[in-house]
Length: 216
Image (cartoon, rainbow, N blue to C red; front, side, top):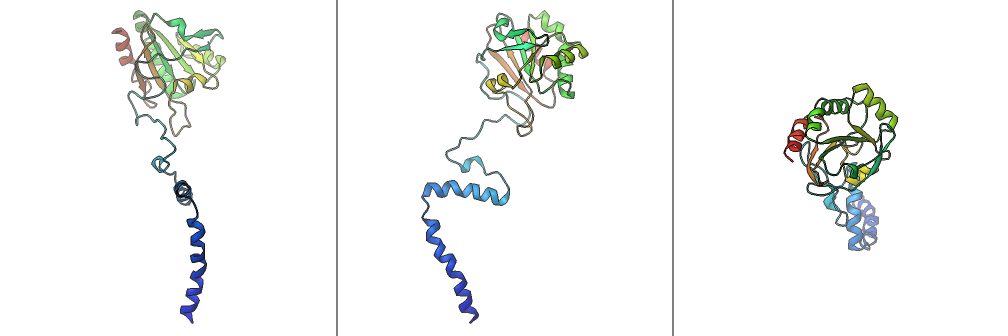
């Protein structure tokens, strides 16, 4: 009797099998990864989705990265407001080298270190004929207070909504929760000669950037 009851309990799962097999092969392929990921609470690997290309990601910590603006390219022009509320276009600086760096926010420890490092070397950049420009999503009033507090002699631009950041393809950090820190060196023709990305050592590249500027 026990054996008969066990056999009866198995019959429903047998009857359900044809229904599962009625899915097309493409549907089955798309369902399997998401079902598995939901069950385990993990993100399915990008390779599991043949129709979805893997997003471009930067290397673990330092060096040149790939994005919409890359070495050897001419980045798109933009017009933003500086710390004094004046409009500034990137094209205005054509004819001289430019060090343009995107940073997360005013008054944060890493961004303050980076800004002060550029400040301390600013006269050397100026002597080399270069301009230094910092860009973040903070408004003009925040930039003005930041520049005044730390005596920053260079331009800070307000990219509210991070439109320029997105257009240039600056990668985010910490799983997309923190705006990335990325520096570009443009030559006199506006061509990118160097890209540096390091969220946790914001002042490390100042000397190297200066050497590149001096050799352009």
